[in-house]
Image (tube, rainbow, N blue to C red; front, side, top):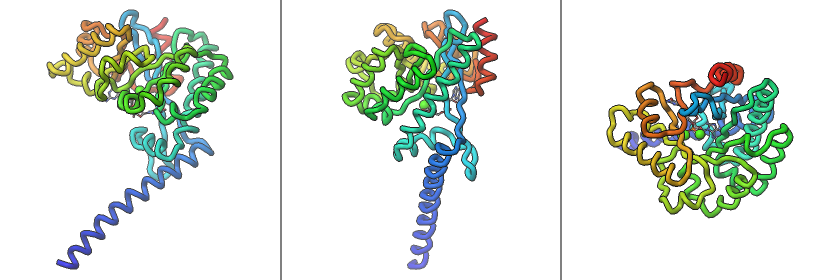
Length: 278
Ligand code: C2E
Ligand code: CA
Ligand code: CA
Ligand code: CA
C-alpha cells in the first residue's frame, strides 16, 4: 500500500510538473514573441442586419508557439493577464489594428470600424488611456474609429474601478461593448450605470436557438432589455441561416459568426468588405 501511495503521488506530481512546465513555456514564449514577433491578427466581420453590410471587424489574436504549436487565446490570454504581459501585448494589438484600419482607409474602405478585445487588467492600468489615444492619433484615426469589447463578468466584478476610465473612453468617442453578455450577472440597475453602447449576446445562447426554446427566450429578452436601454445588440457565434432569421425577427441589430465568415487574415476580410459594402 505504501509503495502504491508513492506511485500515486509521483503520478500526480508529474502531471502537476507538466502543467507548470507548459505554463512556464507559454509565459516565456509570450515574452519572446513580444520581443521578436510571432503574433498575428485575424479579423471577423460584424454585419448590420438592416443594411447587410459589414459595420465592424473584431480583432482576434493568433499565436503559434515555437514548440507547443498554435495556442488558443483562451489559453494564453489568462496567462498574459496573470503576468501583466497583457499590458504590452494589448497595446501591440491596438497598434497593429489601427495600422490595419489606416491602410484600409487609404484603400477607400471608409465605413468599417475595428472592435478590439480588452482585458479589465488593461483598463485598470493608469497609463492605458494615454497610451491608447496616442496610438490612435499616431495612425491618423480618432476615437469613433474604435470599439472596445469587455467581457461582462470582468466588468461587473470591477465596476467601481473601471467606471472612470470607461467614461474617459466614451468622451473620446470610443464605443464600448459588453462581450459574452448573459453569462455574467448584470442587473438592470448596474447596466444602466455603464457608459456602453452595445451588448454582444454570448454564443452559448445563440448556438441552439432553433431547438432550445429557453435560449430563444433569453435572446429575445436580451434584445428587448438592451433596446429599452438604447443599446445596440450584436449576436455572436451565428452559424446558420435559421439562427440569423430568428435573431432578425427578434429585432437583433447585427450578427457575427461562421455564417458570415471565420476570423480571417486582413487581405481576405478586405475582399469581403469590398464585396458586401459595395
Ligand atoms: P471572444 O471575444 O468571445 O471572441 C469570439 C470567439 O468565438 C473567437 O474565438 C472566435 O473565433 C469564435 N467564433 C466566432 N464566430 C464563431 C462561430 O460562429 N462559431 C464558433 N464556434 N466560434 C466562433 P478565439 O479567436 O479563439 O478567441 C477566444 C477569446 O480570446 C475571445 O473570445 C477573447 O475573449 C479572447 N481574445 C482574443 N483576442 C484577444 C485580444 O486581442 N485581447 C484580449 N484581451 N482577448 C482576446
Ligand atoms: Ca470579443
Ligand atoms: Ca464573445
Ligand atoms: Ca468569449
